[in-house]
Image (cartoon, rainbow, N blue to C red):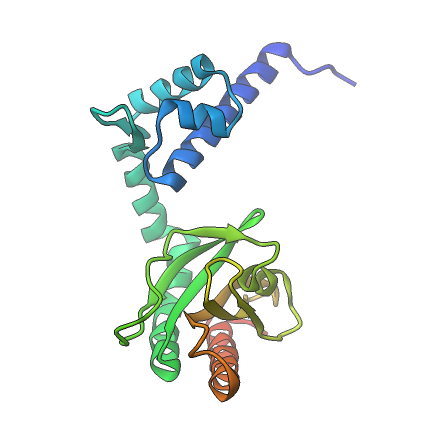
Length: 223
């Protein structure tokens, strides 16, 4: 068996570190050098070297306070992926179902996809109520211990309900969405105040989410 080239291992490790830093900064919105290095347990000098490279390439920007944030190159690539990638097709197909689900339940509806050990919210239709759940598009939550995570790994066709897992006093009602091969490719959910999603209202929400997920799956070509 051929031994790996040490230089290639070094490059690979450097690439992983740079990508981890990019991912961390984008998730947090803005981050200082010391916070970025501490979060990833990297020497400050190592983190700075990678962050400067990402900045020079346009993937990150740095403001006058020294905080790093997403740069123009990253934004351009993200917008291109959102417009032309497979998730873009999923979002476009899901849009009417999100709107119908929000109208039927009176709560904000969301579409999420899996990203490794996390679920990422990629689209929403907001509730028209004055007090409503908003602002989770682009946010990630763990697969483990959340209703959306359970729905993304469960092909049984059952709705998943959880209160307070990702945000206090918020109840999530979630159902997996099957793709053309029958595997779960996304999750539809409604999120709202726990005080409104209980009893008969919770039952109605479960029925509405399950129906919307089935309709979206049919539009995606699920068997």
